[in-house]
Image (cartoon, rainbow, N blue to C red; front, side, top):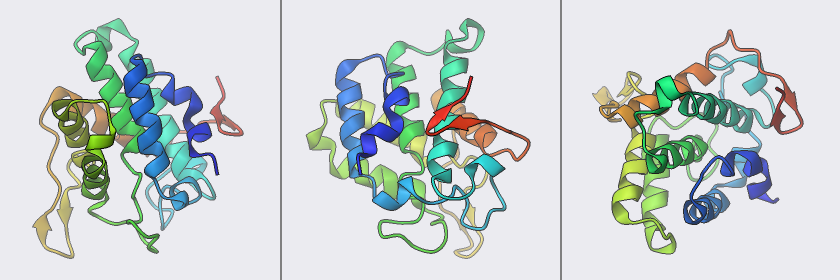
Length: 193
């Protein structure tokens, strides 16, 4: 399985070549199941295009495309630096990378944002990014669930809420990509249009 090919277009949204190289490395660390499973283990929380085999990849691509379009809109994107835009795209590509845990579990792991962040930080010495940029990107991943940060089974707040503009932006793109009213068309792995 060539994991990088799944996100060839999205990787190219990252402007800095060293961050693109880091992103390729981080994608290669994701488990194979990420590229095969639907976005929702129950089918309740994502649109039709995100269901079935490869649904999680399609959901991720839509979240990234929403970000890309908005970040290239001067009214919305002007407040972010090029580095922040790169980190946002990277965070969105990786945000659900361990959605079903480290080993493929039957259902979504509530703490999956923390698992992805931990994986990235465990491999920080293999990246060219400095630790502050890694932490910033990881904070976007950790908080991408937004208001859905309370684990009803553990009866406690497990995930941080988005606080910064970048964290809120990542949450917004992920939340929009999961709306059932969306009807995004794909040609193989590529979004049409």
